[in-house]
Length: 253
Length: 308
Ligand SMILES: Nc1ncnc2c1ncn2[C@@H]1O[C@H](COP(=O)(O)OP(=O)(O)OP(=O)(O)O)[C@@H](O)[C@H]1O
Ligand SMILES: [Mg+2]
Image (cartoon, rainbow over all chains, first blue to last red; front, side):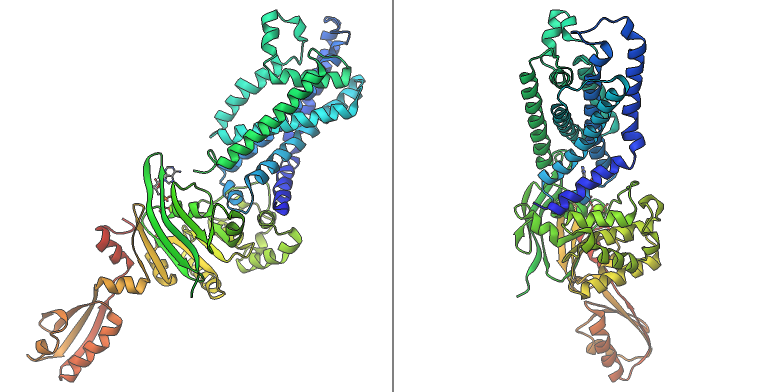
């Protein structure tokens, strides 16, 4: 392993988003705060409790997941695409770094961003609405796995995309719908049966319900299945991202 | 025995079915100043990019100091420093920081890189710009930054893809001086260019490539003299009829007081010709030489100029 190389590229990736925290950390916090306030003060009176939990508390784990996964995936995706478009990739590709080291550096960068964002929304929930967190260690662990998964997925998308348009399309037509349909705002038990069955094919459904279980102790899917699904996704996306990097198919001509 | 720093064998590459390189063979000796010369689209960058790992080859072998560039990529890449033809853009970090990162990719810690980076920034006239972002630098400064980036890990082989493109004459000469210095320190330098002058002036050995093929190679002087195209024109004030017999071993034309010789190597032939003519009691008014260049070499092989 080229440890110094890995460390350098990783700290560059992390430094990059921390240096622009106004674009990378604040927006997620602000929109989450808005969700909490709007739903908390308006809708809560009209929507009955879900699974015995007040609505604002119910959606919070979903908000944490959404923040974690959008931040994690957009960090790697946009960093990779940007390096491609700005001719920065050659510096890394001509250096004595392995595909695994390069992938790891990107993925760690995105994971840190996803983790920081998810954790901040969790804290926001605790502070604003007194979110009870039943097993904090597991919640943080979940946020980490999900951040890692989507950071890896972002690296996959960033390599595949040739332009910002393409990247935005993949995010808008794929990531956003899946995360909304994963049950952030509702319990899938409120859906018609066919839609419930469809949800089982949505990986984000398991992640949202998994973290919901670690926080509120309630879940649509059995917690153990959620956990294995999250872990499986993390591994699948990680190895696909590394394999694509190794093949060089989208980054080397 | 001189070892080869880079050995490229039977290298071929197509982009989406159109052939960019076909069966290229290039050997660069350790410590050699090597030029890859050719017109736009000849395949210079493609060759270099395959060597440095940016482009995947279709077939062929490349070894750096005897090691395969794919199997032993950690070793081969650490031996090479590259300045790409395309300039990179970065608006996050100052150039000093970027150089530190670059050193880090090569396994050099910031502490160990510090001195080297300072030295390079000073040597390349970028010290006062060390806190600037890349986009705040002029085109020439960006080129110099690129050279600093290529040298930051003190590589044995330096690869420069058109290092003087878009650079003014003064800076170009400074860069040439610097490259000569590096060469004297024992570095192997591979440079691509379509400036004939640059190749003739700097390179000990050139490969001329055209449409993805090496069409000729050799020391610039030898290539030029093999052309047999140098011209020597002698203006006489006095001559007689015995001259043709004395000069019969030369190919020349006479137009009254003017003799025009076509020779292989003007430098060695000129003194011989002068001594033959003056021994014979003829008087020489003046002598002109018309030197041919690598441009003529290219022209004679392809029927067109390099920069046409
Ligand atoms: N990314 C690419 N996709 C498709 N074709 C390419 C690509 N890069 C280069 N080519 C083609 O390969 C051939 C060789 O290009 P290359 O860039 O190696 O030339 P070059 O000798 O460096 O030219 P120049 O002096 O203009 O830099 C050209 O015909 C070019 O169009
Ligand atoms: Mg080129």
